[in-house]
Image 1: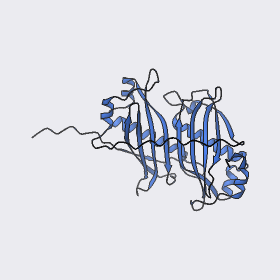
Image 2: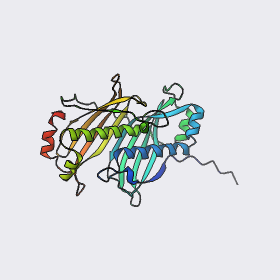
Image 3: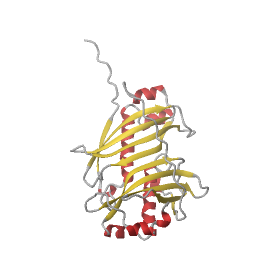
Image 4: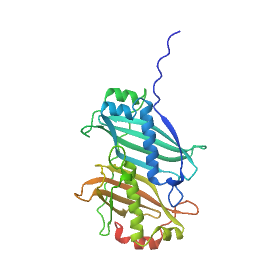
Length: 298
């Protein structure tokens, strides 16, 4: 009998995560940033499954850094749910690789979110981009894989209105990951804190908003990471609104280092106003729009 051919690594990996109570926000939904944490953990497991775990990267002096994340939220996760994260590599481009994600609810396979992340391979000693080796491509790739789709450029933001909102915060120990910089998911946590604060500054703290029976949730986030934020950095997070429709609006963000104004990250979020009783989109309250005029691009 001929010997069996060695098994090829599967191009897909699935991992289940049970939603913890502390991962949920005031609406009882999993916080938007925690979806990115599920994705990152699944990506680490997928890499280890084809022979590139943390120890292997340390041995070859390489590390991956997220350059951009694009996520669309399809339904909220709540405490007690189990989410299945499916991930695979879509393409390689010299120093970059795009990883895709599908998130679905365990039990009925209902779609929860879809996402992609652009990763850049770095030389660990210089932190400069490093060419992805043919050996690495072969480990992650699979026969018959189609070339990845063309990247969609990060959307330009309109000029800010006079009432652009600014929030200062300092990078704390809890924000730092083993790479010694702010973890990519924590930028979204900073952005969401800015969203809460800008609402309160315009007379709409969370209790008032919820008392009207209205919630605001993200339908899509695109985040581009430019430079790492480090322990002790003072950050300035800015935000304003554009493209206001009946039930949606675009919110634009930048995260800059306060000392020199360096752009560390920028983001665009598509926000949907929902009826908290039904979870369905609802009209943005007129009083809310009136109060937010200074923060809107007309």
